[in-house]
Length: 156
Image (cartoon, rainbow, N blue to C red; front, top):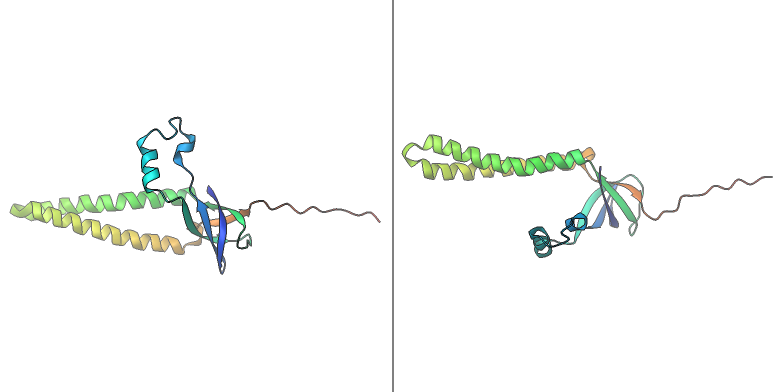
């Protein structure tokens, strides 16, 4: 499970909106910001993100919470997001070149564009299907800062 901390900013039925603070990838690196990745992060990174998460704990607006999502689900979606457009582009270009004959370059370019477009349409449908699957959604697993309730036994 991948976990992230955040603050509940809104309720939506059995879901909540949580604002998370993105952590830097440079925190655990020995170079500590002396590389190209840290430069890109400073230039293009938004520090806060909002996540819609399933609430099974019963949190309120303003609570600090911990969110969790399946690492396997993130891996599958990442593979689909990177692999589908690349395969669509390459397979479309190869098919266009194969069918093009004398005009193989323009048809290869057209095939690449068509393959990429079809892959992106498929990816959109795939991500929407995953968004409807409760097992693939982030969920609130615990409230932070909550004191456990203590039970005191009184003797008669």
